[in-house]
Image (cartoon, rainbow, N blue to C red):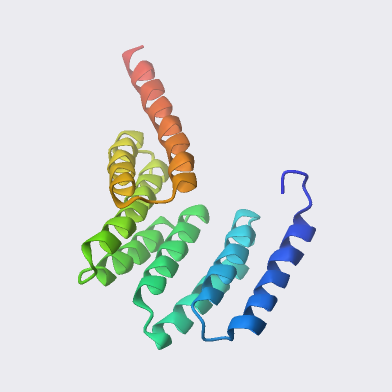
Length: 178
């Protein structure tokens, strides 16, 4: 991606999705992960409509199969999509749906998803122009992520986000004092 070969990357992601579909079948939850990767790529390229359609396809398929925790992941993916496309109210709605789906989840599972939800709420706070709240929510998300043994790459990326939020908050404080 760094070399700017976006059409090639998109083709490879679509190919991987096709291979996964042929190998796993349409009803397998593994297919949702491949769809999400392609949707995330499209979303980050500004092709929000195509990305949303893939995220919604995931939700529809997972709802039928009763795969609750894959469905929570897809709800959070959709909420992230809405943050990236500037639809903050819709992002909050999907985040609320994801959190409601976790009411009866085992503690470890709920903690892992809570971390991701907190991180998403921190992004919403930043998008709404509230870096102080973003720092608080992001710190809570990192603590939950570490407690649950969450993914380190996501953790590193979010630490960078928190650093940026802290810097923005610090700069706002400096401006207010001047």
